Length: 345
Image 1 (tube, rainbow, N blue to C red):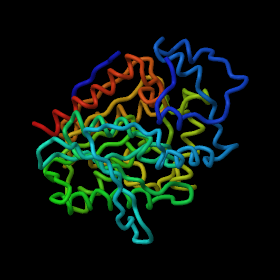
Image 2: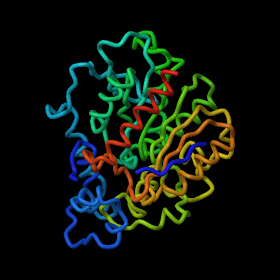
Image 3: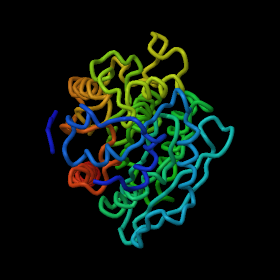
Image 4: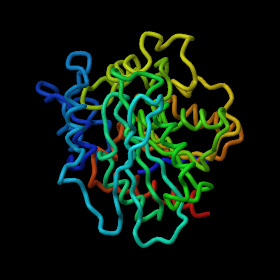
C-alpha cells in the first residue's frame, strides 16, 4: 500500500450543492487556522449546514435544478445522453447519464460514477465537468447513476439502484462500446460508501466483478467512534452532526448498533479479500479520516492492491468546494492519472 502526503474562490456545480444556509454569526476561528491557506477563502465563503433544523429539502431542490440546466459544462469531444432502465426493485425508472468520447476507438473502459451528498441529495450533473474530463482524458465511457435518495428512499434502495445500473453496464457492454473487463466503480463521500458497498455486493453475488474501485473520502462507518468523527463541528464543512443525520436518514435507528450490515456500512465487513484493486484519498481535517485510513489498511492486509493518499490541512470534499485552486487541480489530476493507469494497463 502506498501512502502519500500531498499538498480561492468557491466555484463549480458541486461547490454550490455543498452550501447550505447562510453562516451568519460564525467566525473562521481555529478551524480556518488549521487549513491549507489555499482553502481558506473557499471555507470562509461557505454556508452553514444545519440539517437537524432545516432538513435536506433545500439541498435536494438545488441539486434537482441542475438537471437540464443550460449552464452545465459542455465538451465538443464528448457525447452526453441519458438512458432510463428499471430501478433496483423494479418499482420505477433509474436514470443513467452516459458520457462517451467521440473520437476514441473502442471498445473502451468504463467508469461507473456514483455521486455524493450524504445519501440525502445530489444528481450526476453536479459532477458534470469531472465526468466530461474523465471521458475525454481517461478515454473511457462514463456512466453516472441517478440513484434514489434518503430519507424518502432509505437502504436498500440507493444501493440496489447502484447495483442495477452497474449490472446493466456489464450486460450492455457491446451496445455501450465498453470492454467489460475494464470497468471501474468510483464515487465520492456517500457515493464512496456506495462504491465500496456495490463492490462488496458484486463479489458476494458473483454476477460480475469490476476491475477497479475508487471510493473517494468515503462515508464508511455508522458507529462514529473514531477521534476524527468527533473532531470537526464547524457547520461550514461536513461535520459530525451532518454525518449523524445522514446515517440515520439512510439506515434509520439501527445506526450504530450491531444490526448494521457491511452493505450498509462497508467498515463493518470482516472479510475484505477477493476485492478489486483500490484507490482512495482523505483530508486530515474531516470526519471520515480515521475510518478510511483503517479501511484501506485492512484492504491491503487482505491482499488487495491499494493506493491511498492523505491530503494535509484539507476538509471534506475540498477539491470540489475549492475548485480553481492549485490544491484542487492537483487532486483532480491525480484522479485522472490513477484511472488511466488502472484502465489502460
